[in-house]
Amino acid sequence: MREEMIRSILSDLNGSSADIWASAVISTDGLVISSLLPAHLDEDRVGAMNAAMLTLGERSASELGCGELEQVMVKGKEGYVLMTHAGRDAVLSVLARPGAKLGLIFLDVRRAAESLAKLL
Image 1 (cartoon, rainbow, N blue to C red):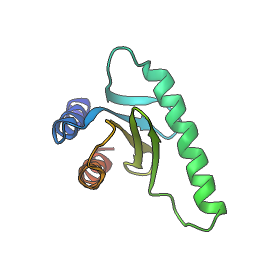
Image 2 (tube, rainbow, N blue to C red):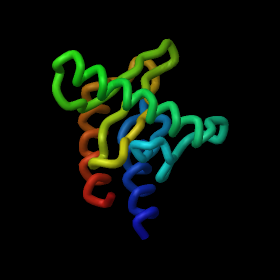
Image 3 (cartoon, rainbow, N blue to C red):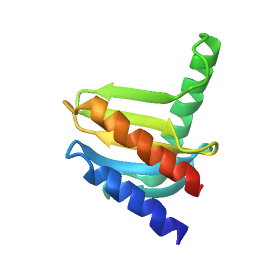
Image 4 (cartoon, helix red, strand yellow):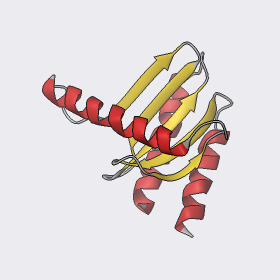
């Protein structure tokens, strides 16, 4: 039941913008809880990379006096990776196309993360 609800939130998030092409909920230690990722992406690898980036983001924010980490964003030529906490022990990771309207995506991601936090 919980898995279905998480997948529903991810599905709604992916459908909220044509610029979002994949999403996943990952534990802070790198285990994929649920995902809507394309077949060519290895879930275990995505989970491990997201956990590593989140850890570095948290350390950077703390060490540089930016306070508690809210979000990590990586911009590449082919798009974006956005990560935000979904509760204390999970992260919502979203893959977005280049040229995405980030303001709208940030809003949708924040809402989805809040819904996920209530479930987890």
